[in-house]
Length: 180
Image (tube, rainbow, N blue to C red; front, side, top):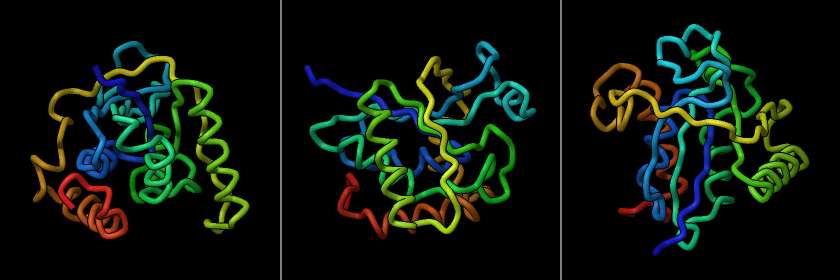
């Protein structure tokens, strides 16, 4: 039996994150959802009111023999703006914050070190505002959010926001894709 691990990341809209991570070698499952808030079993509509405290996240189940947590973090910091507080592009609110929900101390240490290195290397002009928070609860998003980009590529948000981000990601990380 394989020993899979999980990573839970929030970097804007979960549709974008899911589209990027789903085709990576070693990713077994990816589930959009909500973490970090105070409302039990929140709905998308509740989270969008910016009153539940939850972030839109993806929970990634992966095979650490095929892809590392470090790889997942590197991609995370490439595909979103970790210097933008409570927003990604036109998406604004605390549900779009940059956050790493770590599952254990090793993940916390790896994320902290990556942030520190990115700041020391001055990869970004502005300070990184990504939160590091111990995962308490994860609530799966409603079914219609699952695999959203693949099911709705012609939808305006998908074609204008997700498609260019996905193309940029695939160009840089093509060797890590399942079908490279």
